[in-house]
Image 1 (cartoon, rainbow, N blue to C red):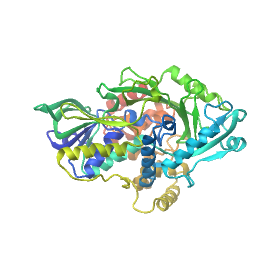
Image 2: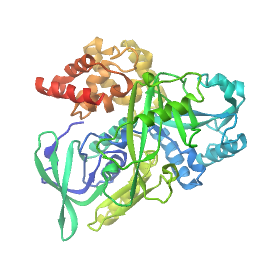
Image 3: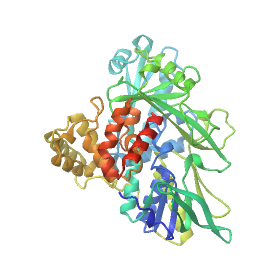
Length: 517
């Protein structure tokens, strides 16, 4: 993956996609596969907004059954099942536990009915993915982090998990391979119109400040929280990274104060706790985790846990904004997460709302509209299509062989499993780095399953511009560890030559990262 701003300047495309999150990535990939001449730009890094600030889940949304949003749940569950087959390295099964406590808002009977319906909508009512009911003792044994005195029983059900930033990155790489021009850190400063119709954009390279014009027959805005559409509602969600508290399963919990659902999820060997859901009217470029939001999550989790987390236990934190359709509902959680496509007076298409799980299907509708407007008759090719980095052979057999090779090269088993998931068939290129320099097989930090070869590979092959791109989205060290200034400096120096940084740039990059940790 190489970044080349010059490929955009004064070029004419069929489609210009503005915004490189999950919706923009799927739209560019789909359009390029259909043979359209595509460009996609983002003012920052790929997935640097909401698309890397999610709960890292590919799920139907069990809680939406309470609001009777069956259509949305069924749509998301269908996509979940498709993605697990098309991208087993990128989307993997994750089982959730739903504890039933004394005085729970939801009774055993209501949970049983809801989970049965969830299985039916997913088409898995009789499979090993179907929900299961547990006695108090059995559930407490499965989730020893819970306070057993509060339990009366529990259920488990199936959903799936991903690394959201890498999901977007793989789709961008797929779009590149299909012929699209993809440039991050490229800001749209204004649109060019001809007789009242948008026909291009003025762009600025955020790396060197150079400006240019790019022309397109159709333009799509997939800019998420930066959208200026008046019919949008922004809500904020935060997540905390805490020490390991779970095995391989996650937990779905209900807050006592307001009845909201939140999660405890295993992620890279630690625990992801979240999310909140509150209306947001502040600066979309300055979204922070607030003290009262931290207190809310820790208080609600500690109500039911054997452990008692404090703010000192927090390893990392992040916040993101969701773009929802405007609604009269007072509670953000009650607003539909469904998606819609709007058309501005100048012909600009605008993607509003949606979920990471169902983004592919929504993007297909965007490209269907583009094709209709352009007079192109090409069907969608993304449904069920193997992901760009998926090996050609049987994935399980391939992964077993790759794991054996990784261990032979000196990579510890846990790091090797994550490395294979993160890079899939490209992992052979990471192995090659280790063959040339064996110390690269070692972990970057003893407590996290990332090795130095992964860092070096990402720096050289994944369109990294800034140190934060590398250490937050390519490898999420900045949110999974409390990194010291010297540790940041060491990693920056290790990759500076690959990234073409001189001493002044290196110092600046380290300084910017330190401010954000």
